[in-house]
Image (cartoon, rainbow, N blue to C red; front, side):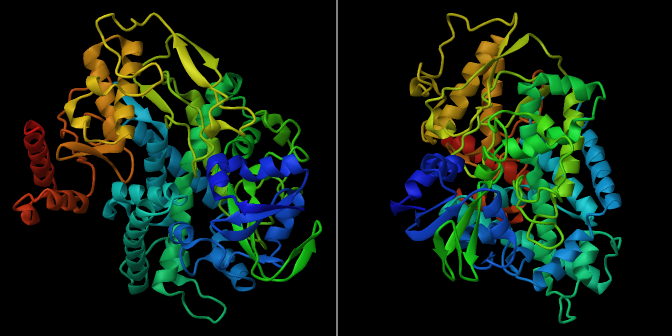
Length: 588
């Protein structure tokens, strides 16, 4: 067993998903001990390691997860923090929601919501798949769980559930802010539970809202409203997190078009193997932490009570001993796959057995949603424009850099050719078969000689070419605008349209606050114009996030000392913020 004598936090953050597997492969071992955030930690990898981690005898999840992660992904009192037999009883409530009829109903709701969202606007528009899928999945999850979406602020809930996943791998202010937003979600979920218990709401008995409102633990007592709310969120949040797998499925269909062609032609014998390979191949969550509950020895190492242990999920899904050519995307490896026979190999969402161990019961719903989404994506005739589909492995959790963009109301044009990303980029190291970056050949006009690029040859923004409103903004905001502009000029050859695309890209992740752009809590279009695509001509809000909650707009108005804000409607707040933003910009 290899012991790393120094703290490995910097290496872990640099190497990301590949950190543990790279070291295990180099040393020819299944485990090594180092320090992570100055605490002694043993990393373990492989099928046998997964069995030990999840068997319920050797390790416990209770107290193992950093509070910055636990408070976002699970919070206190959730099923994941329980030990047997309390865990088995609570787990049974989750499993009762996963019968075939319930899973079918989930899939049907998902397809309905996808179609409604897809057809919500006529004409061409630009869609970022990750954001689109999240919105669809939030509505799907609420309906499936028995929650009245007509009485729910769905856009706000989408943002808050998204933050729980997006900020789980962060520390500091961004994590604290996400945790504050989660408390708001928990208060909302608690009210849902209390309404059922008062008789003010009557969801179907086979829905998550009804199940957790009436669930009792071993002592025969109802769960507290707060704990029941946490478990309700433990249905909603993981369902919305499936958006990441949907994006990875879209990347796979783009990089391996033979699968798109097969599924579009209703050849679906390999649909489930395709979905399982998406779950194995692409990076979802990197690791899971545990704490030793009973002393034991393994591979020559002594594990003592309360020792911190981390199981490498991503590395096990790419273990050469388990998977032939693990760096290749090959769905055929899952033909005839059976979870019961191989409970500790495909562990993207945990290992062990669903009925007795800590394995995620949501795997069945994940696979169903992915199958339906893959089918819809394969049959969609939307255009996939030039974009960066590389996946940074040092971001937790990760996504393609572009979020996967497609255009509706258009037809595919040109021929797609693939170029491998720069292998020297350390953020991409460790991904055996790096996702490709698409470039498109077509007859579109190229950049004219009179159009100055807004980025240098190395990709840095040229400050002299940027709008004045970006001068006080972050380098990341500047890069977002500049790269989107140059890409649009190359693609369309039209300065007006390029500016629209660039501002739409900027407003997707940033909002205008006074005379500068600030990063939003959750990405998404800011107004009706940025929700559209080419030839869209709707009123803009000047960079103000008009789709944010009224509470958020009020806080921004308070920062800018806008008088009369306490009595304003949401629309009036948007108008006042836009007016103040224009005033401050003119003063520059």
